[in-house]
Length: 579
Image 1 (spheres, one colour):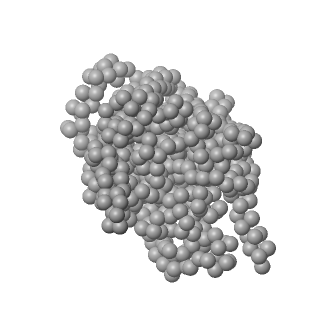
Image 2 (cartoon, one colour; image 1 turned 90 degrees about the horizontal axis):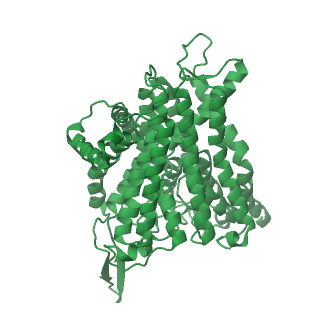
Image 3 (cartoon, rainbow, N blue to C red; image 1 turned 135 degrees about the vertical axis):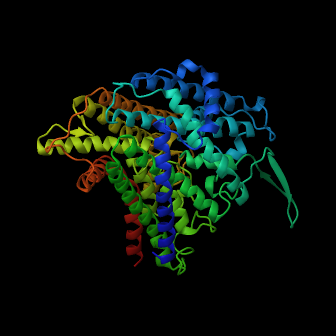
């Protein structure tokens, strides 16, 4: 790796870490009902929203069941609204290009995708959706879905807070929901959107402009309210693009500076949530352990992807078809990547995107080397390397529950986590949350590879084709939304199958973890003794990391062997055959 590439990565990761600390403290203030600088401006906005939804809705506390029910009802109504807007967009305003209604299967897939923070897209936005659909059925749900994941995590954090006097009460969903929307997502969007406009992202209700070319003829260029979508897309770890090319499109990501801004937006939210967790549960030392483990996993992933892409495809390199530049930006595997970003910024962006469950891409993963593409695949399989808004942290704590349980068995003590005993009920709930993820990835992947209507969508045969299908269902299950780009997902089978996986992957794990939080909240706090297993040490952090790797390896390694690992060795075997 060149020094240029190393310092690009180091500076952006360190900058994200530096921003995440004060942002995490701000999040803790928001969720602990402490005063913030923006309260005088935002409190009237909150009161207006409370008046619209009914003041009584935000007064009473909720246990985990009430919290989950109100979350599900809110998301159900939003999902139905998205479906209706898409299904009748031809009859709604702001449709200057006269796009027809979205077909039922595609509308169902899109509604399921955007209400769950997945943002998987089986369509090209600029050729399918009206401006009204882009705003009301795409951009607005990005706020709702991101807020949903974040408040679920906060409700779980409250179950672990010291000196609780509220029993099983985890808070009020609507109160938390409104505060997250106004203070965490809406406010930054108001400040950052003009920066992207300055860099070249359009923000207009003009549907298209016509450009007269020098060599004759005309080119029709679609436009729309792009800049505001881009901010919440990355800040909310959403990932859906206004254009089919996503963040590789020059209107979504026009300059290297905008690329850095969008990369930082993806990282700071999930990173800050770890800092907020430490302050909410009263154990900043434990938060530092979690932050270190997550950051270590991210650093390994980033450098693995960048090095793999800079080395390029072995067959082409052996044949002398690839010239390597000393800066490392134009050599290696540039297929599917934008020249204005180069290999380092492309691999860094996509690795951060899959680590944070954002799903945005500024290059095409289908063109990555087997090792580079496998990095993104593994991160979605683990789904806890910072992860999306709230959900990644919940998954990491789920692995922590297992780590505590295993360690307790090894030393012969009842396992405890933050003063709460981990017993049969908690392990059963954590196990259900864990097992859902591989089940909804591996079963539909196998089904799709056996069925003619599944195989017919493949863009490639062999192990690369298997990776395309495996990646699609992994992305859907992890609510990531990034695509390998070689699979035609706009078919009845993939629209329905991916939508079902998206919905189960989102709500099953959240509900199981919320139930686990409710169980812990109802338990009395156990006093720490000399025999208590401390979870806020570097030693336990290493054990936590090992638990994640071992469980992930046992679960997904066979699928990786048949896909990217087999393709990697096939490339090198081909070189041997040439020699």
